[in-house]
Length: 372
View 1 (tube, helix red, strand yellow):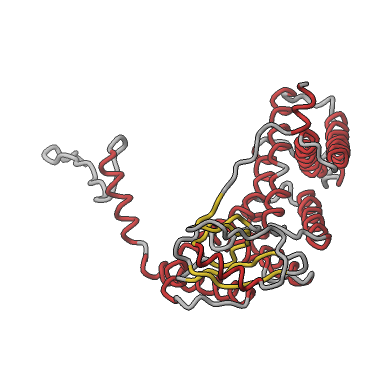
View 2: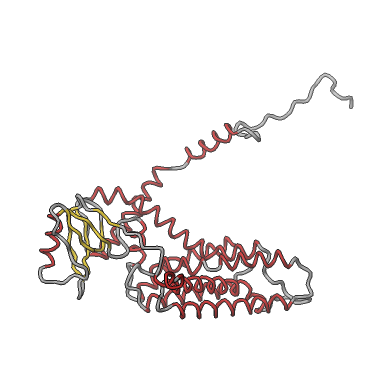
């Protein structure tokens, strides 16, 4: 066949939404089209419903519902967003060490001719996590020692023991394959990063499962148990895809956040944590400056009860009281005044109430003694 001399070839047309490299305006337009396609109204409705559900659960736990319903609806989306971010942070903190372990190419492969990976070779990630937790506890022990804390020696002893056990296991695993060629310096640096990130699971579990005050043995037992399960599971999932580990952690999150605290008699712990993050509730009693009329209201409600810290209403315009804020939504706050025996809850007008934050001195008594 003779070639068609009279016909000229034409390049295929690029798609209309194609983005040429180095064209920021086209990229911005594409991003705006993608954002426009998101059903924001539906997401807002779901967020409002989730936030209202969380707030209703919290208000039921404290036995008080603010009469200002619009304030509840107004805060619901913000509360829902914080709950999602908080939950994602917990899941991410549990999974990040496994991701870093795989990205650093640290899993120990099976020996020559072995078809299955020996269980001892799976102890690398748990060992590095134990090292990280030991370093964290040791750091807390040093801070406690510098503040003349009574438990400094306990912190330091436990931290050093954890770090020593984890380091021993990791060194033993490394020297088992000493003949294998590998970049020791790079591998040790990656192991140090994983050990640093290995404290994240314990940290996020403490944020999730420990209340702001009145921490009991039941709370500590739950944290230690869940952390032990996470470390033991990491030995089995050190070669598992990271997305699979994240999916497992997400599915187990309701069990850890709701079921375990409920088993130990603290079913409202998660919603209280979310309320504290959202600023609706204070984690512990705080100093409040209130108008003198509100101060006298608190004094009259106390009657003959003795608060742990005195209520000062001697000034002509302002008074001072120490109380834990349980709800600051609406025109009336619910506060709890700690007493020598028990506590007193009452509502106070929100108008004019101010928080007082006192920054502690950075110079502790022990540091002053050491310097002298």
